[in-house]
Structures are given as C-alpha cells and as structure tokens.
Image 1 (cartoon, helix red, strand yellow):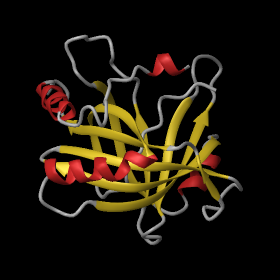
Image 2 (image 1 turned 60 degrees about the vertical axis):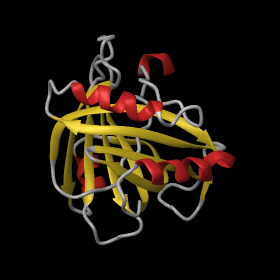
Image 3 (image 1 turned 120 degrees about the horizontal axis):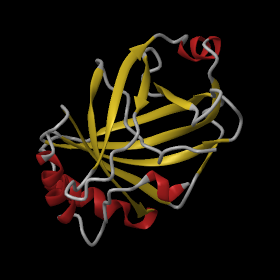
Image 4 (image 1 turned 180 degrees about the vertical axis):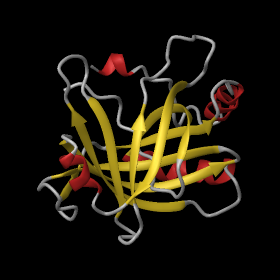
Length: 208
C-alpha cells in the first residue's frame, strides 16, 4: 500500500489551508532526554505541550491512480475536543534550493462522527496508530517529538505497542505558498541539533 511518510502533528484548533515546510528525523530512546534538554535551550521559553493522539488513516480507491488519503485524528487527553480531518498534498521535492519538503496542508475541525461520515463517503480505514509526545516552538517553527504506537486491537487505544525503539522528530512551519525563506531558517535550526539529531528533507518515493 502506497503512503507518504508518517507525520505526527498534534490536534490543534482552527482551520488551516497552507503550505507545510517539513524536515524529519529520529532519535533513539536512550538519547531522548539529551534531545529534550537541547530543545528546551533552543526553543521559546515556555513549557512544551504534551499530547496523546489517536490517528486513523482512510483511503478512497478510484478506478485508476493512487488512492485518495485523509487522516482523522482525535486527542486522547481531551476526549471532548473536536476531531481533526487532515489532507496532505503531494510533496514538492524537486527544487534542490529548498532545504525542506513542501506540501499543501488542509486541517479542519470536525465532529465526533467523522469516522462514520468518511465510511459513508466510501472511504475505508487503512491503518491506525497512537502518537504520544511533546511539542516545542521556536517562533513560527514547531518541533514535534513523538513515540508512535501500533494499535493491536482496532479502536482499542489502551492496547498498543511501540512501532520502534526510537522517537520521530518533525520540524515544520505552516506558511503561505512562496515563503521559501522559512526553509533556510529551518535549516539553520536543524544544524544546531547536530550531531544529536539529523533532520532531513525526506522524499516519500524513497520509502515506497
């Protein structure tokens, strides 16, 4: 099954229709505390936000071409909060001058009946996972450090196991199209995390 790289962005409020600039990397479990310490020193002087989210990935298969993908996410820490529906466009990775992957991002709040609505529309759930971690901020930049957990029994978010022995780290900025200077700021920030963490512009075609 074809799918873009997993992206883990915590549930937030509002609706977004912007371009997402993204760098991704990972850090082993035993290096997590060192990374968090470094991020506290580099990021804005505020406590990082903790999150625990359940994400369901839905596919709509057409007659030809790749299936259309939507992501439905809910907060496990705030069960009454709205669900979020997210669409991620095809990454623009061809421009070598850009230091980050760029893709269209649409994020809207939805009611708790979102999974049922998607099923009625013909979508089918492809997979689900739980993401737990923290969010750091540096101006417009967001750094998400998360542990991805496999859901062992469909819908039961209490029955999970880690997908790996590492944490996913994502550095992202949401900005209007054409604001490519933000990728330079991201590159500069990512350099300060080396050699503890190497953030890269990941081409999803390499993962297929």
